Image (cartoon, rainbow, N blue to C red):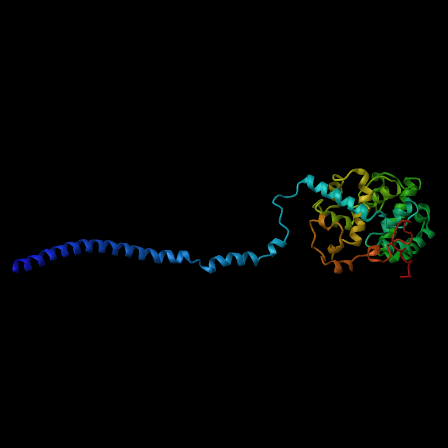
Length: 331
């Protein structure tokens, strides 16, 4: 019994020991696996739970920036010369529809009167010239009459136009030149016109285009301002501006183009505050936004017939939609 009692515990112990040994190895393996799983579990938990802050920020940022979308996208490439020419010609067509009645805004009955009125228009309005010339032409209807004028008497007549002494000198000088060099007739060539005192290319082109039907581009302050805003040229010198614009349009368009651009500059595209919000060619203008863009406020800036007021001519053409300007002293 003792052997059996002692043997069985030994065998049992061995069996238990062998089982426990096997179990301990398996336990250690299971423990290691459980530890490895437990170590892996915490790492997978943060990845499985998305952080709200990083993902919500980009969405919030995209929604909170509508301004860049509202702004016009800058052109990736600068406008080509061909594209500019096409845009310029389209603007001319739009202006022709807007101002089918465009005309020179100086009252005249012949080439001499237009020449004199154009010289007087320097540094003043066409309206003031138109209010002054009836008395001037009543006193001096021909170049011969004006050349023989008493300077002080002429100065008094044209005083409302400003710079009346210098203008009197120019008018008497050009009248003398017409009398002595051109038989009292206004020449129809630019080369001859610019030889007259007080007459430059701008004045010469006005006379050629409107008294003789010779195409010409008139570069006054309005014309130069608008063609630079429209990016037809970046030149400041009138002669260079004239050359750049002449290269864009056929010669047959030069005179009427000048009238349309000047009309638009006086009525809508003003120097200090353009009425951008009331401008029909705004979609074609690369300078849109320099002036008032609110439509209601912009409409209040319109001038002459566009704003329901008289134009600058006392004797406008029959197709002019506005009212005639008032005579001197009747404003």
